[in-house]
Image (tube, rainbow, N blue to C red; front, side, top):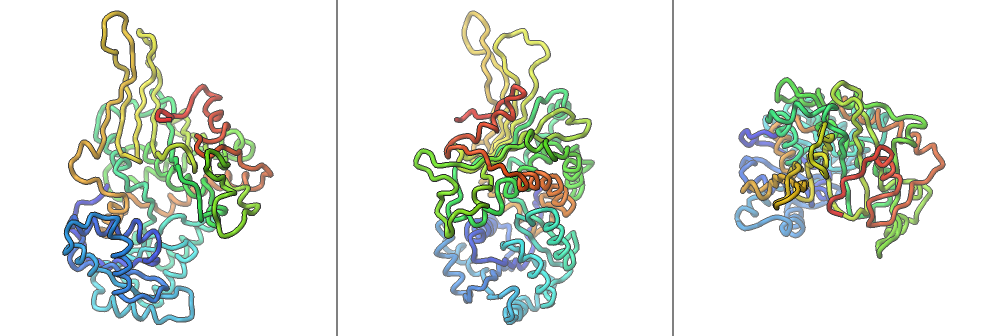
Length: 488
């Protein structure tokens, strides 16, 4: 869980510090942390890019692009934040090494501070960056490195990156980030399960019928087809985000709340996933691609710098998977994973569908379910059966018992990156992925990818603005189940 320890003094060096992720997520998160007193007065933020900017140029860029995203109710505090910012121009992989000297001079005299190197850049740069960082003599025992997803595009590439980074940094110094793990609901899932007595006795195959994990987006991929053609929904969302949510839902109670016990239990879940190979890929997975509908373009018609290719026609913008965990707790309980672009709603949630009561004395009842909503509004709902008011026959109605974090707690709910950056600065790896965890996820995903890529089949089309291809509904329908779509 996130730490509440005092602010640590650190130099946070962001490679890709002028890019989209930095401007939309990292710098706003750091400003909120500063505003809430979670950054020590001496902490600095050093952006690295090839932009040739001075400190003043970079501060001006942040003032122009970030200020409107955050509440600047105290101009002096905003100026204090800008004063933390620096910029160094470095050409990683290039012949000009002068930028490393500039960074070395900026860091000189602060060797006893924590140094956090945040790689907000493509994964192909992770190894070269770490190697040149070491050659410049900038890696200290108090250094840490943060790796953004995706970590490779398959198991061999992930292992290669882990080897390259691991040759410079010890595993304890490597923080592989997944912003879903910083969401309030994700942390509350652990509290809900392990700090309340009523759930754990029924958190198993005797009482749970199935689990659904959904990450749905209304947006398409305008301007991103070059990236998405070679990523697709399975690599982009399932291998990291959805499998992380699955592990936290299915993990055994850890012996203690410490840095490794939780991660140990998550790895066990990934290792217990039943492999999906060969002809089973067609039975237990569905892939789709959105087409033009309702004034929205199809994937092949999205604005892009290059025309569609064969890879464009074959890539999935939607996938659904029926997964199973081979252990005593979850034997026979399907976990349905679903993610897609151009769906009718933006929603990320975990739905735990309980079995029906063993013997119902009231007609019209429906099984209980627990809904953990990650976005757009984080919260938890337990749907129970209640009697509708009135005389005469008893009429049942499902009623949600709701916990909305925004409405229940007066404090501002931090964004995911705020929490994760706080943990990085404190050196707390609990909510970050360990090497064996990342590689176990790829080991399960790779056979699905391989079968899809060797098949001549194209993804099943679905109209933009709908809940996905027909095959996704058949995936549940074959066992008499259906997706949780209460808001559609």
